[in-house]
View 1 (cartoon, rainbow, N blue to C red):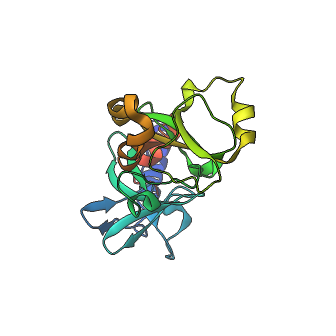
View 2 (view 1 turned 135 degrees about the vertical axis):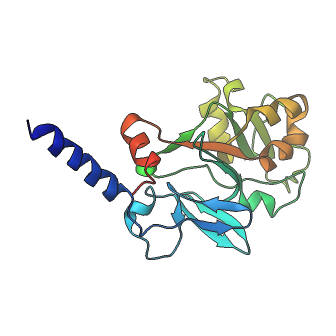
Length: 219
């Protein structure tokens, strides 16, 4: 009898045992269970307990994901679909109907996450010295520094973007859920807060190699 099948099976068992390392633990924050690919911020957990850059802290029972650009409140995690629902924490702290976003959403290239098909982008042009092809945001006060505007990014003519960007003090691009944007699209310049406060969605890597790792707890 050949020893090769027995050896292969033994190596498989050893591999499974190694994936199930006991040094990574789930943790509870509010109503959410936090598990791989996320890990607890500011702990001594081994690196393999989460994907790089996906660190969550629990602040007054509220889970906060720390991305490269800013902090985002976690609204929910679907481990089956491998998606996480987020809202800019700074947006939640502001006026409900007229929040001002300050940062593009950025994350480290090796974080293993990306936008989902549920997301679309909004582009905000702040304090512009020319009039853009839309009504200005009605709830922002210009204070003599020029009006501000918001567009669905896909609606901006590509030939206009360089001119508009140069004419404005700040340009910020943020994702929102298409479902909520559709609800306020006809009144976007005054109702964009609805879309911002409902946040956006990120998905994590589900390629073949990553799937094996995720299905075994990431260890």
